Length: 112
Image (tube, rainbow, N blue to C red; front, side, top):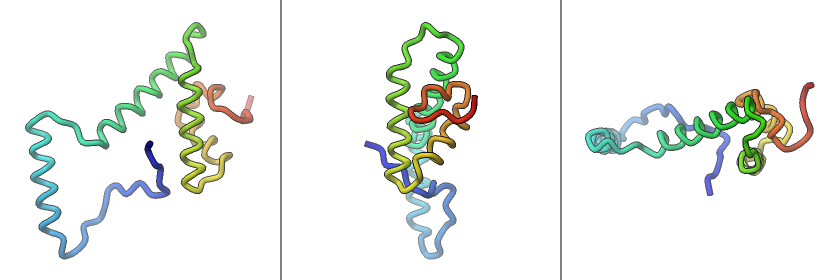
């Protein structure tokens, strides 16, 4: 299970005295780059883009099954609520991000 926090944490400001950790991370990222292996954040972005893409296609094609999409979006709202956000604001922000398919976001509708 993924946990959403109130802070994105990126980009982080370097802390004095942590040069060795930064160098280790630089080398690690270079190994990943050479191997063509994505970092977890790249996977997260790709999954989010795929969900948004599916939502966009489903908005244009009423024959597409939206049950799984509704479950994913409901879980996303629930994760944000668990992280301390209000359900209404979490839902509102989610709709702004994927607005073309806002009728799939469970809860009361905002707008026409």
